Image (cartoon, rainbow, N blue to C red; front, side, top):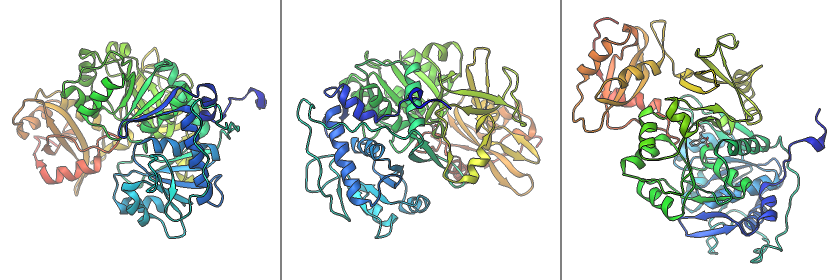
Length: 529
Ligand SMILES: O=C(O)CCC(=O)c1ccccc1C(=O)O
């Protein structure tokens, strides 16, 4: 065992930051045009932590649900929970009350934190004995002041002085193995999994990220991804660890986001591919200040990477999961250009093994399931059975298929769980998508299995016509596939749509794609099955 004094430090990141650089800017909120120094931020966190103490009998290890959208108050709650050893369970504010109630039921909540917009939904999610707190105090102007709806807010500590000197720094050592976050994976079918992420996972991820993206003391990271997803909260943790500024934008909007990048001289931003495409479609020109666009959450097309290169966007395609506290591999702009389609090499602390069905490594260049290990990997799901299923001796089985080159760069082929089984044959949707995308009039495609009486499943395809293509004949798509795919792989139902349905995190929503196909799909007869 490693002696304690040689172990990775797990002190309160924010308290440490507030002591080291109290006057540097921690957060900028675009919506309210407000900025907080690290001294002010840590003061707010203390007040929020005090309000939690008042509302919850025993804060350490309590489960605190969060129904708050992307705003500084979310960041404040995160660090308040960290400081007091509570566990935060962020919920997706865009879901319906019934979807949220099903999730809340699984979390065993000791309290629920809402905001003005979600207060009425929040009251439907928990019973009367569970305190509900709001980050919008109706009696004060403070955006991050936290009051309670069901209970008295009690005493709060005062604001720090202008020079931050009187801030009381609580820099207690944190328990690295403490579960800091319970995150729902953006599952597209079946019951979503609840991922446990520890303080150690989050700190390791934020540390390793810096070795790929670099850190400049004047960095400003634009946070416009939802903070209840991993890709949205990760930049807040990174910025606090680095002592740099998180600029918070409640919702992405191509024009408003482009404007914010100019106005705040943004140096980095996390985006999902759909956002990157929308920015470019709107004629976005990246500001000179911009050093990186971390592009993840879903595979980016080679066309999008090429468009980024042409527009001078410093794009870092990344492959990550909630289960690994964000990035697993990340490619640099130079790699992304020189090695088309790659998501780059693993972060410095992460190992990726490519394995066959018996979990033995396959030779370089050959495809296999990706197994991830290292300090960013979750200790498991809330559900023990699912944990047992997901892990092997080598680490976390991702269910994704990919291959690596001699230098260790990774390519993702498809999500294994998306595999379609038709008439006993396995179909890799990625292969069908590739065939469809080689059609000159098709820009994007989603391929899913549709229930079929005879074959179990049949292949269905939603296709999006390329820009400027007024009409795309289903017959021409069918012919194109006839020439390129074995009979069982050819789409038997084809639908032409303007846009693919996507989940909030940007991945294709496969259930919605299936529904769309049932609505607009045309059944085609292939010359052979
Ligand atoms: O796919 C996931 O669940 C993680 C995605 C993620 O973290 C992410 C998504 C978009 C942009 C950047 C990142 C990141 O790795 O920080």
